[in-house]
Length: 321
Ligand SMILES: [Zn+2]
Image (cartoon, rainbow, N blue to C red; front, top):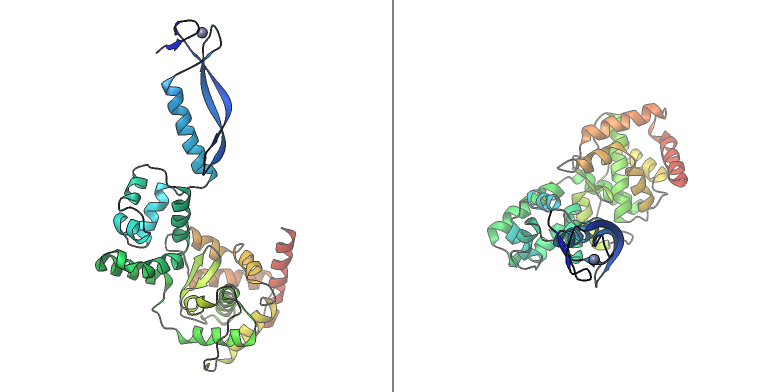
């Protein structure tokens, strides 16, 4: 074993390696970690040992990554794949140096700020889509087109589904509702409709986002309202009676809760839980059917106006947690 030099004893010695609680602080981080120190076995003086120094540096980086939830290499690769974008174009889109993403993949630790941006686009296709549109001139047209296509597929923006548009108009005209809550109401309408009437209410795709289930086409249409109540005075086509009835009951029994409460309901349910873990983050209609049928059986729901048995149960769960 390599020996360390002790200045006090004036000779090379076999260090004793000990662990010590330590703190590292700079402009960005303040972390506590277990460091190692090399000690002289004769006089107890702390010695310079390059392996110990290297160990402590790695430990700081590792602790920083964990504590600040810094985006991992795997997560960055997921972004590239999900939105069909290259390392360079992604760097350019985000206004970073051209090779920033390449360096992160090579092991450089992302700054906290860049990590946050990357995480937000990983989990929110809508955030990524906004950045893509806003900074489209930063990247080559071919790269833009490829990525736009992939993102639109995730968000299902192009599919024109007039039923869901009319259903959304009906909802916003019959309730004071935010976009967050609207998405959850549409999700429950789809779920109970499929479970009870054995066919889907809307053809549109439902995605699992961090804030719960989202129908991309409707979400985008009303995005400008942010957290405010949606107002839509454009004409609405008549809905079929079963759908209208389903919406009325979902509004009555779920619409009484805020978007955030509804979000926490959906986070307890298999369709969202399974989809958020999946690669494409789609809540399949089959998954809604399976879960919806399980619910109506478990809560003995025979008619749509009995779904309060489920919503009241979910609210009790919410309060108790
Ligand atoms: Zn010594």
